Image 1 (tube, helix red, strand yellow):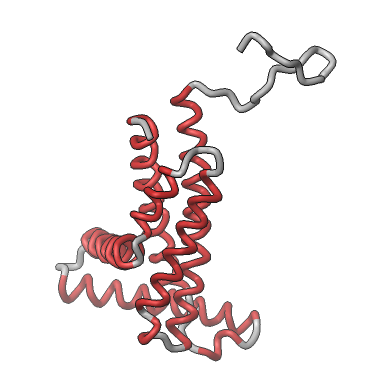
Image 2 (cartoon, rainbow, N blue to C red):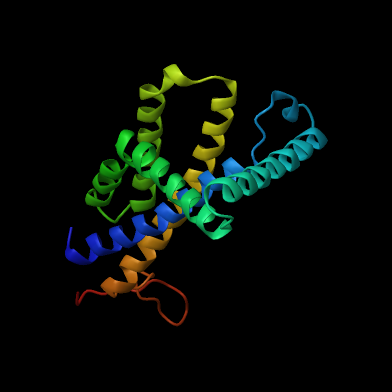
Length: 189
């Protein structure tokens, strides 16, 4: 792995970290915790509204009583708490950051597939390490975070692959085409 690929991987992980933080915050603010919210679509919508209102009330209470009324400071502290959760549990405790680097080292040929496999192995390691803490509410949260995290990994890996191609100067087509649309053999290469 060259310096360009390592640089692209670092940029990709920084982008992915912010997407993972957004996923944690979305789950924290919008996902209902009560089991009654999952009985129907209207109950789920009402649960989302209740969870959102509760999050706003918590923000108002914490900001007024502990942060001098500063919502900006509350947003910053919440962002830092979500970053801590992602880095501590998703990246380090589940060994995802190391598995992701291994996926990058395995080559560029199937990079997105390798990145998704690294995420899958990290999710299995996370489940194995923290299975003692699971209840039904925690399982809902974990599934929501894993689905959103998979989307973050797919998007960042796809963008990282494109950025690596752009920095390497490789075109997207592998074989030159003739004017009739047939693939030509380039024997001079």
